[in-house]
Image 1: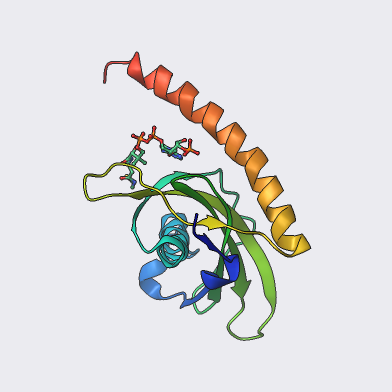
Image 2: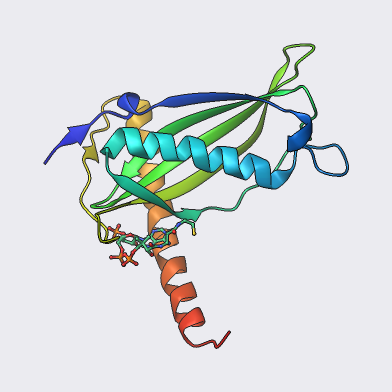
Length: 165
Ligand SMILES: CC(C)(COP(=O)(O)OP(=O)(O)OC[C@H]1O[C@@H](n2cnc3c(N)ncnc32)[C@H](O)[C@@H]1OP(=O)(O)O)[C@@H](O)C(=O)NCCC(=O)NCCS
């Protein structure tokens, strides 16, 4: 079984907040930040498995700070955990004030990516081999989240299967 280190897919993306990223109240539009988070996670997933991937889930997101025009947004992407065909990717989002350089965490996201073959079916990926204490802790914590997520996925699948749109 092929294994890879999390450091091989670790990714930093930086964005400057521009006028087209703002909502009508002059805050960074939440949907734009979600797009940047998903894009950064997609880079991590692709670097890790070098296969087609799709976003399976995004865990709940809490936006902690307003982000304004001219601020920088730094997205740090890291793979915490793998199963046969899925990856848990963590994105830490840091706001850096353009004019002062002051940095604070704005949010943290956990996404699940699923690797797919040319028919869109889940396919096997390299597993991560946690080595450092931090990597092992990330892996164990992610394993617990994955278990909870699997239960929620089953519940929502059952609920929606019984509903007529
Ligand atoms: C993700 C997708 C490929 C999974 O296909 P599937 O036939 O349901 O997959 P399976 O039931 O065989 O599950 C394979 C693995 O993926 C996980 N998985 C499946 N759907 C998932 C989801 N939505 N979120 C997180 N994990 C998911 C399963 O838990 C399983 O994990 P395991 O290997 O740890 O047991 C399919 O549901 C899909 O294409 N979804 C749309 C993805 C998409 O278009 N995303 C962009 C936004 S619309």
